[in-house]
Length: 254
Ligand SMILES: Nc1ncnc2c1ncn2[C@@H]1O[C@H](COP(=O)(O)OP(=O)(O)OP(=O)(O)O)[C@@H](O)[C@H]1O
Image (cartoon, rainbow, N blue to C red; front, top):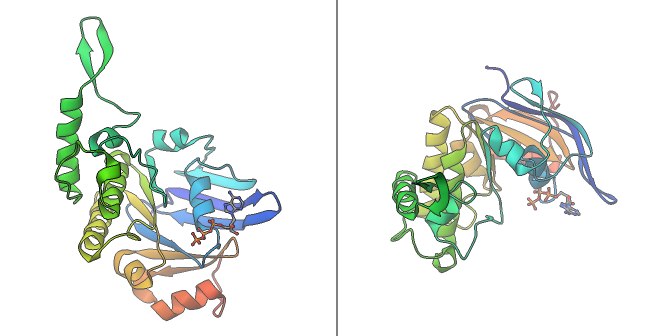
């Protein structure tokens, strides 16, 4: 296997007296889908927040391409090609999907004195339409506010947006949770396509058949620690559930 792209070693994260992470480790390799699973409250979202610059760990080490990494903000992660689709989606409801896709990365029209700060909405809409079509977000129009879209369509926009900018790794926190059967299959297809382009996908999901069908590897968190790692092809739903609940312990847990 290749060298890890992103590694967390012994992370702790305290919120007041709550220990959300208690020495959690995690590894993502280039061009793989790795699922991060665990029971409610195991620390999955907290770990992703620490790995995407949203939260700073209380202690522990992050490595990116083998070098120590400090993420002071989500922009530090984005600068390294790391994008995140959060559980709460974090899309701007008053803006249309095209504006959401380019939020903070707007295309400006060239002016006489260089860039005058005028948005090139036409270019953004055209590129957004092409991108959403390619990544399976079925939208009738890219210029109605996000607030007018269905939950599933919003989810597709959030996924397509993150995929547009991720050059190394994308975290997806329950990206299929609100989706119907067709949209869910589309998002799973997008995940595989992103992986096939050499980008690592870290998937958080409570749906074990889905985890097994789309992942190359699975890492299991319990009570704020990694307790097991599996190759998806070599494991079963029963084994994953056993590791999550503590019914089964694994020798090579890190
Ligand atoms: N901002 C916060 N303040 C206080 N406690 C928090 C905060 N965020 C998370 N926690 C606590 O940390 C623990 C881990 O939460 P986290 O959301 O990371 O779990 P999770 O594995 O993502 O759970 P779920 O599957 O239910 O989304 C929980 O006990 C939670 O209550």
